[in-house]
Amino acid sequence: MSRTRIVLVTGVAGSGKTTVGTRLAQRLGWPYFEGDDFHPPANRERMARGLPLTEADRAPWLEALRARMDEVRAAGGRAVLSCSALRETHREQLVGGCDDVLLVHLAGDYETIHARAVQRQGHFFDPALVASQFETLEPPRDALALDVRETPDAIVERIARALS
Image 1 (cartoon, rainbow, N blue to C red):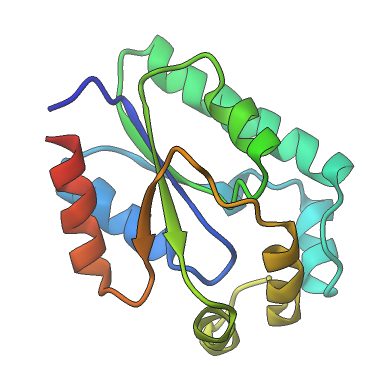
Image 2 (cartoon, rainbow, N blue to C red):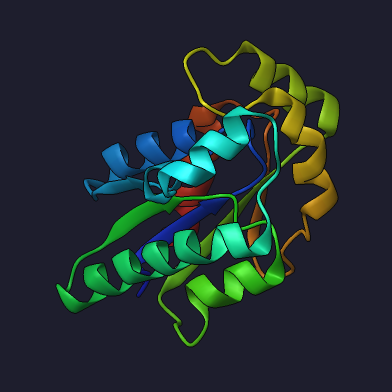
């Protein structure tokens, strides 16, 4: 296995981050951390009302995610995390200064991803926000970019191969 300690699965809401992250973590036997769980309640409420997050809203969320990544490192562990990390500055805050992260970007077109977001049940995220996610998105230049139209199992297989 490579020197990767953390796999960070990114993409807009509805791209399949949770599904891929969960399956990858199960395959690797690593813990999985869902980025949505690190949002303060005010962020969840805002998104449920159909309001996009501001950079000020995202700041404590990104800090909490980076803190978890640093905890994993300090414990000598490995982990899979998923979060949108839409902007280059977000990814820099999460990964900056570390060479032990495999950045995965789940990429797809608006129509495919919006349709998925609409079909989700029991999620706080208002599907109307998918458009704002695409507006905010700065696709990463240094990520393993995978097409969301592939099956989750095929995506997990491609990530696992990249790790070996």
